[in-house]
Length: 258
Image (cartoon, rainbow, N blue to C red; front, side):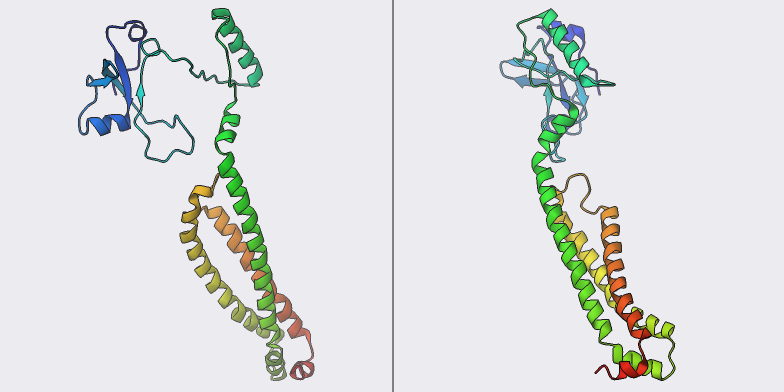
């Protein structure tokens, strides 16, 4: 809403103007237009000539509720230091050298410092979060590995305990396919129920860890689908191997197993 700064605003000290953020306008002039309102700052009074969208000017990790921002023309409110952003289509180094040369030509006493690419700035601000995410990911991998080993061991042991039942069924004429389907259905029923309960619990718990997750959402569907499929495959494999082994033995040997 309104307009941007003009060259006249920057050079005229008599008419002091500012541009405010949307949050600033809504907080101080709710339900009304902020244009042409007066803002008192220090020893001066400024006229609001524009309203702009909120921006994350301090950190990438700012909460959604942004602080109110006020923008002043640089020549009206001088700053001892300011940032210049440049977009480069190729390597950033030639652009940086060109900027240094331009500044040196304008005023050799003005230093150019704290030069960084966008990727470097993002990496600096997210170092802590990425470390926490990596540490959390390492623990998650260990937990996933232990879970897979546990599921495989318990399922394989449970199925192997049905060897005598398999022998009785095969002695009475049951086919190997029938016995195999029976064992898989029995084992996979508990697996599917466990995965369903575990997924619902994980969806609720991951929201508590959303501040430590970087690059994905707390309920990232790809992550949930991958882990669920992996656990289901491990559990099915744990059912299939001992079940297949049980169907291949002689019924007499199976009946004597206990």
